[in-house]
Length: 416
Image 1 (cartoon, one colour):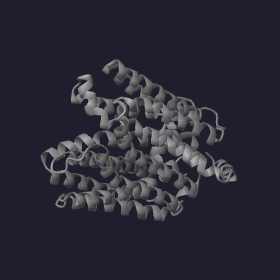
Image 2 (cartoon, one colour):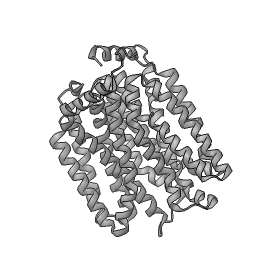
Image 3 (tube, one colour):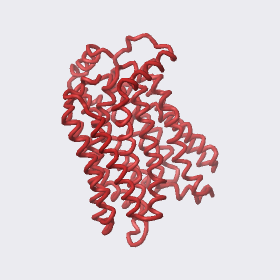
């Protein structure tokens, strides 16, 4: 998108005064709904195994298939949003997401694992057109400080969803174990209404680009900016790999003796490191604006903090309150990193290709989320010091790559 068009759209948002925060809120509901799609079901998986008489692997596919389907279709959703409009992808995706929740709930009532798993795959398809496209929409609507502010809020909303979703899932299960499936349509309907009424998307004035030419232009983006884009993609993916792996490890640890913490109480403990992420991401988004130098300082500081905290856990994983403190520091480091990375990526290309670039980035984030828990579980089964030594080494490598290759200009808007 030409800068003049982008500035005009930003000015239109400003003219509405308080509606800016209404728009921010509407955008923030989209990643929140996405996170609820997986995390809210985690507490009910043991009940599902018993009632449906399925294996642990079959139960895990309820989560995995959702993420894999979403990851595969995210780039397609990105292309469609570039060709048509962001809302033309987000709104139907939310509708599919909610409808598939009803289907999964009916499958649970019928006692049909096959219907549930098919519905979860359909939900993954809907999820592909939600949060990644909302990130691209932020790049269309805002610039400079407003862009980073909105992206920081989106990342904070993502983290908030991780905080509250296991608690909501546990509370809903007190009604009936499959109640969470029927809660999805309500959350999706609220997000749909917010996006429909509160977001005024700027009209796409550019004619559709033929697919072959479009793919060639995306390749050109990576030829020109891949030196820093690819390391930025990797840093964001690794941050979520560590975050979800840590949460999985901590969740498993809390359930074992001598702690024996489960249910809502466990959700409250897991919320501690996540709150560090949420608060830090929101503040970071508010303060970085288009200050490239500040972004670089915060990204490197965040990665160093995460590396140091994870390295400290090699020997300080007992007592539990020390471990939680270290994991909270690591999450704060992630909160410093992600809003900066998100802002740089959404501002790196024009409107015509922004959907695809942010979608490819989101696909890698999904991979990080998907592979974190099983790899952390595998390493932890061998040795806890080995686990934290390995992830601290990965975090250090990520820090060095970002330090060397991701160098925002003094005014980060210059990347657009």
